[in-house]
Amino acid sequence: MSLPRQQFGHLQSRLFPRFFALQSLSALALLGLYSRRPGGGELVRTFWRHGNKTVWALVVMASSGFANWLFVGPLTTGVMKQRHRKERLEGKSYNEPGVSNEMKALNKRFGTLHGISSLINLVYVAAAVGHAAWIAEYGA
Image (cartoon, rainbow, N blue to C red; front, side):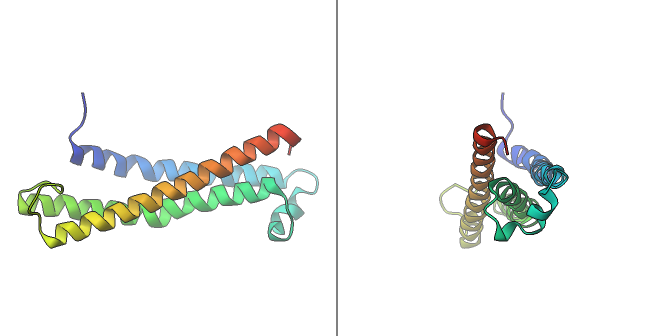
C-alpha cells in the first residue's frame, strides 16, 4: 500500500521540518554538553582557531540542520505546493507530456531545491560519521 504522490508530499512537508529541527537541536545539545567539560567552553567559543574535530563536526551538523530547517526546506515545500496547485489548474500531472512552461520551470526549481536539500543532508551524515569515527578512535 502506498500514498498518492500529493498526499505523500504533504506528509513529508509536515515531517521534515521536525526532522531538521531534531538534527539541529541535537547537535547544539551535544555542543553544549561538550562545552561543559574541562576546557571545552574555550574550545567551543574559539573553534575556528583550533583543529578540534569534535567541535567542527558538531558545528557542521548544527549548521546543515538549520540550513534545511529554516531555508531550503521551506523553499522546497513552497515550490511543491505551487506545483500541486498548477497540476490541479492544468488537470495534468507534473510529468505528463504537454505541461505548461510554468510547470516545467516549477519542476526544475523543485528538482534543484530537492537536490540541494539532499546534499545538505549528506554533509550532515558525513559530519556525523566523521564525528563518530573520531570519538571511537580517540574518545573525544
